[in-house]
Image (cartoon, rainbow, N blue to C red; front, side):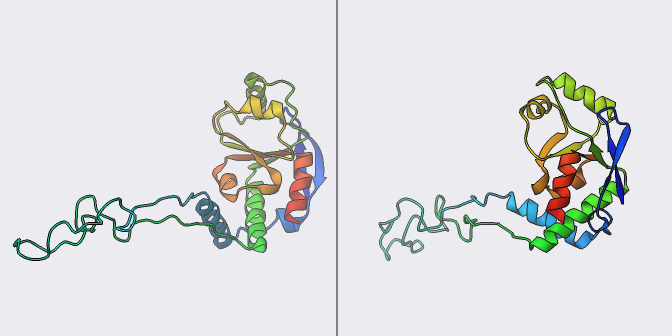
Length: 207
């Protein structure tokens, strides 16, 4: 199959060969869902914590004698029954890391890229060449591509300074490494954009 290559003005200037095993894959919703869950889970820090009765400061001395006061027995002021005492079954720090098998991760990415391409939401440019660090130049490029009011994910082979600096103040534009693309970010975007070099690297990563 062939993929259209667009100029910075949005015109089709060339075509590039692409493997149907990568760009014509049926959307596997189950695998895509698992990939998104893994990505979202891996974003969690897992640093939540609470103090149980052994962690709370103080409470070494028995508050009052066992018998004779006519009140309930108490062994420590850090009992969970007391104000300021320890928490029972509270949150503890732990890792939420979820590793997805490589084949599933590749299948999820292929599925989403294929779906985006079939919907006309995947665009390949001849090159993404931003000559200055000015935001106005980047915004002008988006306007010429008719993407100024859309959520755009740009997949790059290398993070060029001019592209990063000119786009960082533009709303709903995200720059990502083409070899480590996020399934969620692609689905969440109105348009996924890359260049010829990025497409070659994407094919290599998903092969």
